[in-house]
Image (cartoon, rainbow, N blue to C red; front, top):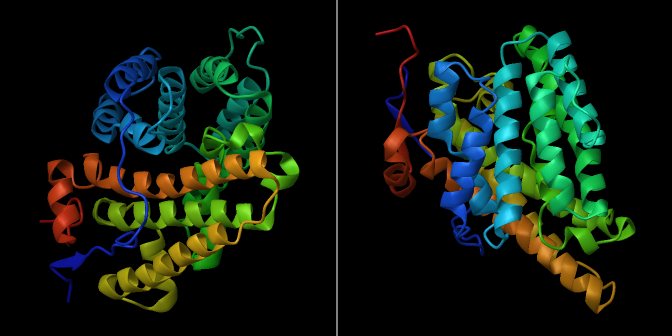
Length: 336
């Protein structure tokens, strides 16, 4: 029997980081939203979705201490992610590969003259890159571009998986291998405070890499938990850990939510343990590493909090749902 509703796990109930919002939010949101709109790339449905999502809010929760220029740049990044996701969602693997190559070319060559054959995504990425190189240090920008390539590759893989009805992503392990790319978190980490002054040899330390992976996994689980209801209603839940767990483990919705909650709590404990075990590289580097680790901890809170403040998943009832942790299962679209 189909359940009437289900409980939402709360993996961050005891998380040390609380909600913070960048004071430049209102003004940079207006600027970044107008920037995306200037490309005239969204149809009416996508434009409505864009307004409901408010990715600038996500950016300003994730970077609460960024100055105005930095805040505008990360808003543009979140909105660029949306534009790529939206324009790739209906395309074949081959078309998404072309889109991905356009974006990477623009990020690698931000000052190259725009081609008349440039796609909308390439043009948007080039304009974004022009701002990003003025915001990030050369080290951080290089790290950003290096991590963006796996993101676009994962988007291409998702397009292939979508073409196969996600039948090749039916284990948690295989799903997470792609989802860690499609979530887009790793490129965003390059914009965190402290990143610029962390040498590559330190950044590649296993414990710092563990912190990044834990943060990515928390963002994935939060997003997939809260988006599951609307995705299952429209038959678009193939790229969601709840559906994968239900299929692989033979569980119902409530049991799958419990299973993911257990994993979530394990990951939060792993993050805090890794943070406490960071070695010393000297006072100057240690302070930057601490700033970076703190930024990752805040990112996990920001991603979770945004899911309730955006209208994307719960409409205008998000804050109420956050308190009750209970949602009514939506009927499948097209059914009474």
